[in-house]
Amino acid sequence: MKPSIPSTMRAAVYRGINDVRVETVPVPEIGAGEVLVKIDTCGICGTDLKKIHSGSHSAPRIFGHEMSGTIVKAGEGVEGFVVGDRVMAYHHSPCGACYYCRKQTFAQCESYKKVGCTAGFEPSGGGFAEYIRVMDWIVRKGLVKIPDAVPFEQAAFIEPVNTTYKAIELLKLQPDETVLVIGQGPIGILLAALAKRTGATVLTSDLYPERHAIAAKFGLDHPLDARGDVVAAAKSATEGRGADVALVAVGGNALIKVAMDAIRPGGRVMLFAQTQHGEAPFDPAAVCMDEKTLMGSYSSSLTFNEAVNQVIFDGYGKGFDLTQLISHRFSLEDGVAAIELASHPVADSMKIVIQPGG
Image (tube, rainbow, N blue to C red; front, side):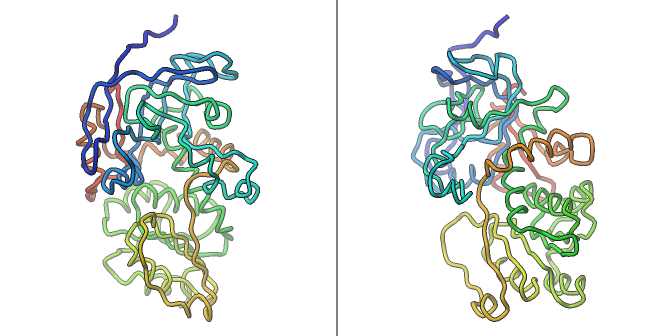
């Protein structure tokens, strides 16, 4: 029996800078090749918060892209998916043919920058709502079936895991290398846990013991107190050389210098959280004479979709249970409070999720 679909739904609507309101809006209509998904879980991402607080995007919009749920309606011509399928949807998918796609730099593809999921208004993900419309090109290339044994909460991490997996792959880590991950929020822990899977030794830095305790559940057993001398600690752990790699999983640009100082000559610094434009001083001689590499990684990569699915699905219950990163679960009616907490994290707050059915 097909599920009953209402004509209206509740959604956390962005109305302007620092202005999000839970409102009643129409359930999106779908067309040929598209599906309608009832949202179970949607994580709040730092990029959602940046858009809400900076006014970088016009209003109104409905954000949210770390989502999972159930197909409740399928348009004409949809292949491979039926009503009742449990799915997650990437909100971006590249064209696969342009110059940037040929160079495997998918996040710079103009088609990739188009958003293919919406709960109404300008397409912006839409996961902070009860239902989303998934457009045809996402259904073809960016819709993922979730195995019955994997909870929606685990599957909601597929997109953020893809972004972190991409960063680790770009670094081409070796088992004899030491990696410093600065910041142990949810993204920092994902980066550190994936780095550890390569066989590298991973040092983790954070201000809060509570976060190190969560990291320890993923086998991360070299915690550093960020209030201390992280550079000295990285050198002490590597016979005075410095780490081979430092990943910056915190947005503060001041940490770029810490990362550069903490790596050895010939080492690499990966910027992962630096999504705000501005200026950040660093020593150019460290890049030239010390041969240190400063690099970045942004968003997901189609190349790693299948590998990430395997990590997420096979890892549940086997050492990679990402539901352990969820510290707070909010109903959609409390979506504004969820965004407020995610915007002002405290020691015991990690991944914040909105669950419309909660």
